[in-house]
Image (cartoon, rainbow, N blue to C red; front, top):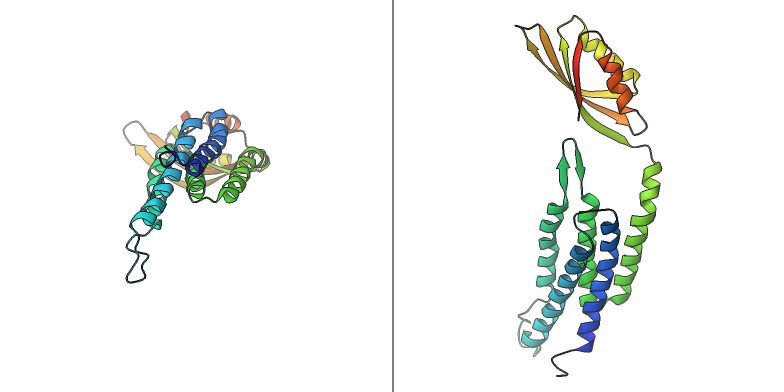
Length: 227
């Protein structure tokens, strides 16, 4: 029975599960799709992969010195790093002009690394990385919220085909402290109408509602859609 349940192996698995769960808890609180259970399982699974890899090395490696070892203990761990990319990709969501889930994908990657460290017996490194990850998630989020960041969005405007309308719209957007990065247009000759597609950049403190209202007040504008 002593060979069936190895106390050291159990310690590594439990610590990997605990540390992965700590990172997942923060994601769970913020309502992310990969939360408490996902991070726990990623860390736990990565830990088990390393334990099995080390055991393969001990059981089947050639330690006689007469030839190559025959077993590379790092191969399974390397595949874990590659495989976790699929989970990370699944956590990333593209919504129109923005992308969500990058932090969650990075957390899954870190959880896998923590599991690998626990499986290799590097408990100190695993604990330090977990603490750094949790602190960065909790504290740096507040710092990021205070930073004036650039935002990007698409604005579609339906308008009557009036002379100089594009220049007037671009001037309005500029006066609202936004910058036009790209523009395309489509003319409806039969109805004398024109549709503009602006791709703009603006600071986080710019009022999007005010920008839409200003555009809507321009003569000839019939409809505005942002995002």
